[in-house]
Length: 152
View 1 (tube, rainbow, N blue to C red):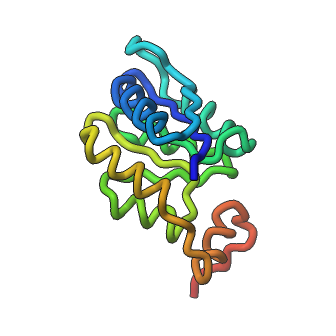
View 2 (spheres, rainbow, N blue to C red; view 1 turned 90 degrees about the vertical axis):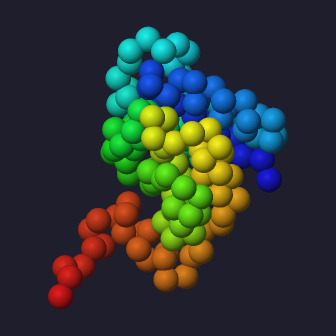
């Protein structure tokens, strides 16, 4: 099943973004590249917020957020309560982000992982369904902190 995927990065991840966007298009996905177009220095929050808005508003089914480490842009994306962005570094963490957390955005660090690992992560992310069940009540609390109970 092809998804509409929004992808964004900062200057440190422009090359990885271009490679992943091409790979996703070859796999039949519709890709919305939210920038940047060049490796000129930019601020990752600007692109993280833009990506988050696309996913949270339904303009994209899922998102791919990239920066040098993946940390900064994942923090920016997670500021939007409609997004659950998981910073991943291997296929297992990508799979679990979907299965257990129903992540709708994946973040990766271009300076930390190579293209093959990034493709493996993205493949696991896109093909793993949310497990539901016991995980659902936990995921519900991520967007509704008023439902969180004080631990005993």
